[in-house]
Image (cartoon, rainbow, N blue to C red; front, side, top):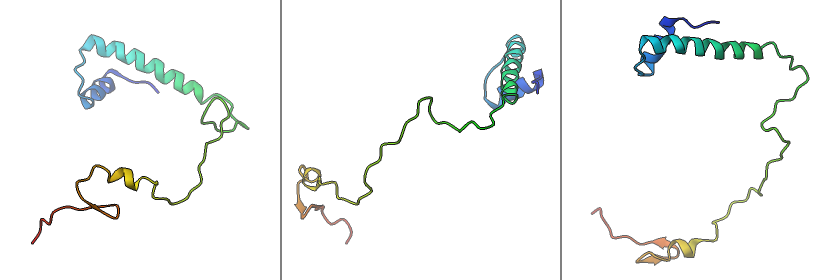
Length: 95
């Protein structure tokens, strides 16, 4: 796959980037080089290779899935002007 000058200009327009002609030609060469490297990846034999999420093997740290209130009810309402059993009390605004 290769990128031509019209494609570079179209992508620049879609990205709303002002791209003069001399820079567009340089960008065309750069993009073709990048696409060449990406095409080389399809030649790599990956049979029997496990997919990885990291270079080093890691296990995820897990916590027990338990529903709690966070034991912070007192801290949450500590600065409220009025509370009732860990609920905020606010003035009535609808008649």
